[in-house]
Image 1 (spheres, rainbow, N blue to C red):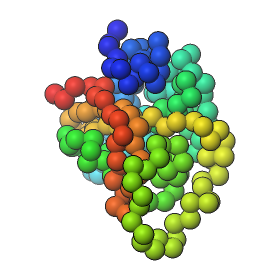
Image 2: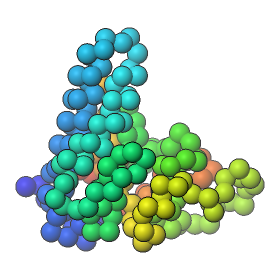
Image 3: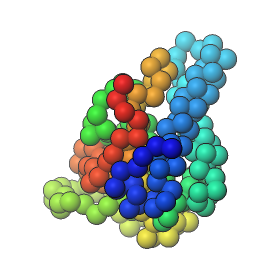
Image 4: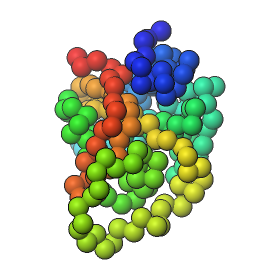
Length: 194
């Protein structure tokens, strides 16, 4: 059994150490499945790997975390709710860079809405810029399936086909709208830097 830090113990209680072991193993299996899929289709691009990894990360986490919480279906994927927290995987990089470099591709859509609605409140007020097309009152319809008091625990990881899973951290982060960077209120490593 792994050891969980104070944040994880406060967030997940007695399950924290078990989660600290299971989550990295699930992401490593997801990488291996995606790599095998890529090798099976023999493409010259990494599309098969990337799309495969996106799909299997949810499957592996749902299977690995079954019994520790409740399953919820969002966007056709099974995700786990554990002690009032939605455990959500996020591949933030294809190379070994700090999680503080994590940035979303888009400021809109399911993932952005999920982080804005269930992540921690902003540490500071956003700049008063006219974002016209971004309307917080309309969130992705799947988010209506989650109670408003659910907290989002991001499991952010750096992974590539050649190097595998290089870094995993989990914690609470807000989404800074102006540049789409994640601002971490709390994050802890799950997989030590190699």
